[in-house]
Length: 87
Length: 94
Image (cartoon, rainbow over all chains, first blue to last red; front, side, top):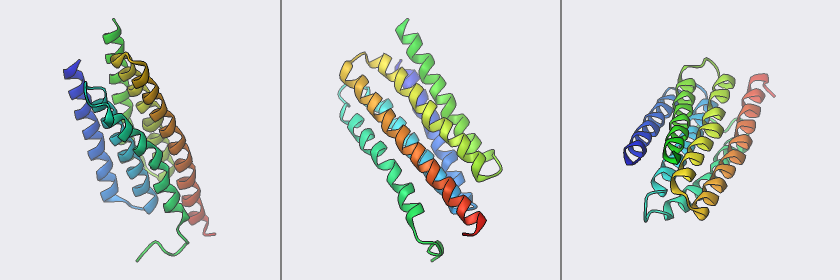
């Protein structure tokens, strides 16, 4: 089971890297925001994987906080007044 | 037996994550990328959390995993809607 958890962690890191590629390429702001959403969820997944290891239960609380804050970034992004995108 | 079920759920969740990020890279426009992303967010994390709950076999841990999944569901639905609306507004120029 420990091997599987390591493999799953590696797969999530690969997914995170693919998300970073999308952040790098763009092209629109919305695409980058989508990629950050994916990176946030992948981070939560990694924290969950680590949090079930013995003695690491605090990481589940960290994952909960990250999950609760995940929506705030998108709300802040779309709440910007129009025209404030390029500066 | 339970270990096998947990392993299958975790692998399925991982598959959804990878499919979501490949979709995010490969699909042509923002709306179809949105579609790929929400699969990874909702189903991938859900399956992963279910597998980990089976693996942990602890009520408190299971409840916490459920709570995390519900929070991510709410956040993902809200932000997918907001981003799509934002893109649509810029497209139509209003």
